[in-house]
View 1: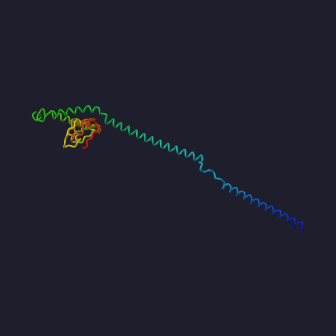
View 2: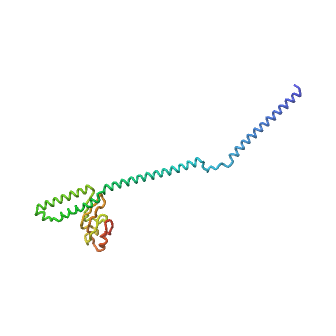
View 3: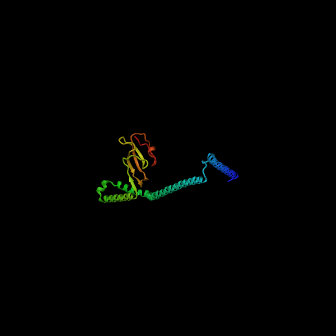
Length: 231
């Protein structure tokens, strides 16, 4: 190989080395640019994460609507149940108290039977067997009538020696009774009646007082009103 060819080969090798070095520098520059861009993107201000996305807003709205619907359904069910209970109670009351008017009218029959029995002296019954038989018949009729009353929820009340209750008793008079507590019923003028626990007719009574502090006006109130019956 001649000297000129050797020099030419050396120049060619030098040029290739220079090109390779240039490419390496370019690659390093590209890698640096890519790294710098990534770093810039990471250090840049992040998006506002406190702003909900459209899907999140939609989910929130649906959840709110679901809660409202559940609440409405629960209220509707509760109202329907309350309505059912009211209707049931009204039917029960109608069944229990449907005979109220008839029951009040027939009470006078029971009153008259009792008056008839009280009007026949025991001595007269003892002297006259016919009168005794008549009395026994009236007594049996009264017992049967009261039995029918009980069967249909009508209960007779004779509150002798009981405490005055304005819900079930009507005061007709009061009289001083030193040996009785004020408000004690000392006489039943007319028995009272209830229908399935509800007042049908108040018992008309006389009560005791042990001083003059209770006036006639206070004790002549309608059933349902109260009077002071404390000692």
